Length: 181
Image (tube, rainbow, N blue to C red; front, side, top):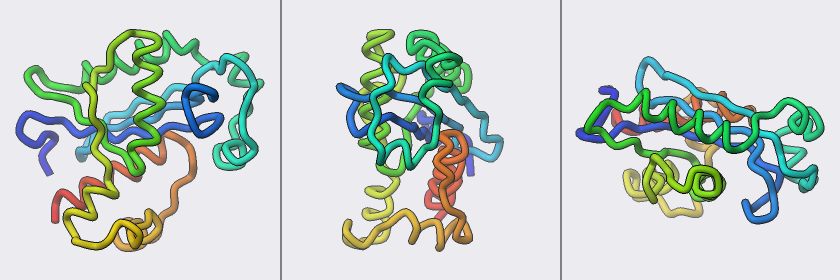
């Protein structure tokens, strides 16, 4: 699988958050990797503005909010570092493409964080969703496509860990395998 498809570089992104939307809850961690054999990676944990979180989110990621408040990167630094990484891994003349499973969720937090801190987003304004991609590729209905089904089929049943980098890598591998079909 080539590193790029034409003039695009696919970058798998996953986030962990304190809740369901960026207007009320903090972005806590970002993991990203290129969807190529080398899998260049990025990971950052962010300092939340407050300790407000939902029990559902806390049960998913198990990140320690107080520890993040003490040692996480300020959002401005984290997003500047993420933008720099995206620019470093993307060859000249090639557009980075944000890829994720349930990309709308991860995208809204990343888009919001980039615009709040840097007033721009190196990915532009559109993510590529793996579930929607598989729906188009397979012809299966939306309601029948589940991540566990895809990981069973393509990743030997490996489950996501809810570590943003590990999940970005698994999702990147899944997308690479789907592209190869």
